[in-house]
Length: 242
Ligand code: NAP
Image (cartoon, rainbow, N blue to C red; front, side):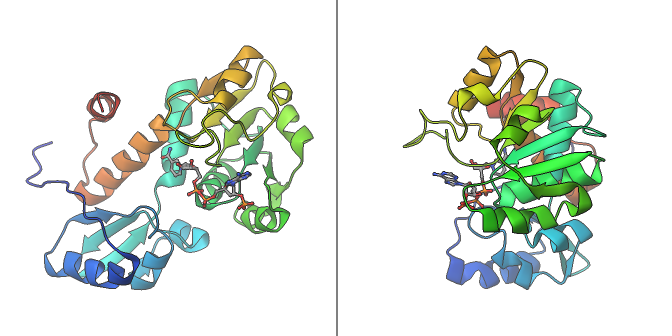
């Protein structure tokens, strides 16, 4: 891209987060990607938040502009862009079910609500958290049950169940909730194919993993920092080569 910059990883302890943001300002960084477990606590160290970051109470991107730290959240846009790129799926007027109610679920709920989803049901282990997550989706979002997953055009798994490790051989929902005609997105990208994706595909659904969301949330960050369009295809090749 002709940008004179490097992208490096800094592991930061929770108690050092404020100092890390101050250092980014001191060293005049172009920007910072923020990940687990700092997405919520970093909100308190931003001078400004975008409307989306404010609503979600979570930031995954810091932009340093004229000495000010602006907090953005690009996860939801990353999801929408990957859905369009990989499945040519537009959520407008569609029925959607989101499994999970944590940070990733909220980013997805807010973005699909803003993009015109007709109905968003949130199916989660803790109904109280589902209720809180529904708030970011406004009037079209509500707490749902398994039947809503069966009736949805788009199903999104936003729980870590199925990730490499202890739950790799598990799915958060029974296999028989899926059917042909559905688009089923798992936000997990390790492994690249989860039990939930195999179950859904075996019943005729069209499936995708979370790699596209990972790439597109990062691509949006690069746009924010540089004002230039990033080479998404090259980013995908780099990530897939990992
Ligand atoms: P989080 O805030 O910790 O939320 C996790 C959600 O999963 C909660 O709703 C939780 O339910 C539910 N859950 C966890 N363990 C469960 C279990 N054993 N049984 C039933 N439900 C369970 O996590 P997050 O940050 O939203 O991340 C969720 C997933 O999305 C992770 O796999 C993460 O890797 C992925 N992700 C992907 C991308 C991407 O770019 N592709 C970006 C962000 C996140 P309770 O509310 O009942 O606790």
